Image 1 (spheres, one colour):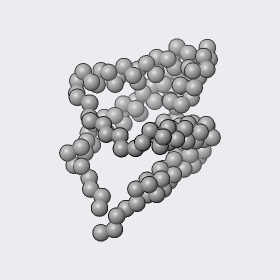
Image 2: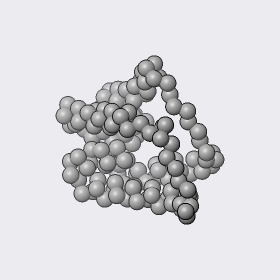
Image 3: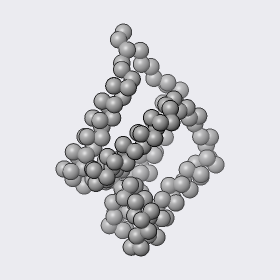
Length: 145
């Protein structure tokens, strides 16, 4: 039977994180006219694209530095990885392939695209969510009561 670890339930930090992501995405589109799609930002930095290299690098650096600042303020939660390395590698590759086929990632479609009322982003986000639910149900079937 599925149970919820209520001691680990943190709605206020999740809300604060969501607000920060929304504010960052809004500021990027307001001041740069760019979508905060992490896969696209990272891909362009890796390819060495000169146009926008500065803001893209700063955005990615901000993601890393903000995590480091967080560790100064609060302890990091314990992380337990229960999957084997091959499964994690395959999952990562599938996410990367899906990101390319969808022309964007969950942040680009789910956060930015939905806020712009993009039908393409709605379809991509529904696909992400449905695929995620099906994957969880197949790999971790619900136990009957």
